Image (tube, rainbow, N blue to C red; front, top):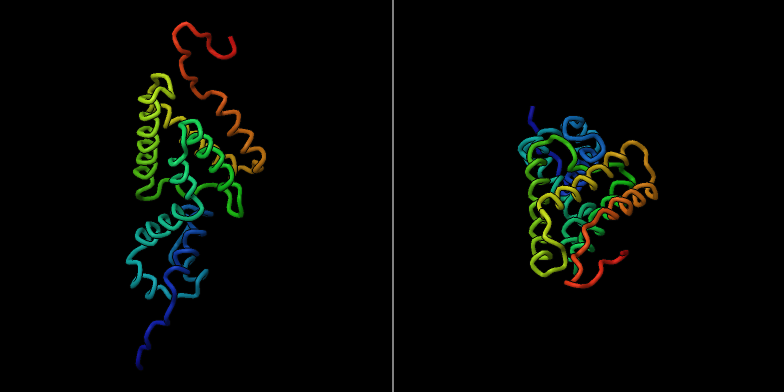
Length: 193
């Protein structure tokens, strides 16, 4: 008996299907069999293309970051630190309340802790620039970045728990009421005094 060649398939379609599965169920909740069921591509072909479940997850995560979670990179381009924070928390609210609830990057899968830490440090660097420019008071920018990340992650958890998109945007607005205010110029009164 001759073994035929594995059928041809589009790796992008497999990555997309895997992204949705991992996003919905988490890393531990998805098996290669689940991916084969969702795509019709046999295990041998998936392993030949991706090597392992971990590598498939890495590629699916990159797809998620470039697609549904692209708001993170876009937020860092905003003109002020406050606008960066607004884009982060409202981007999270919008993304995690879509067709699939929650966030692919909130979990214990390989590489996610490093990704989250990298995002916090990129935010902190952006906030460092805002402090240097006088836009923000002298705050602990790493702590401020962790706060914004924690709000985004909390929004994702609330989405999984059934909070509506409107609820999540309201949470984002409420969180931003704690945003640090720039110090008033010497001799001037701070806003609201």
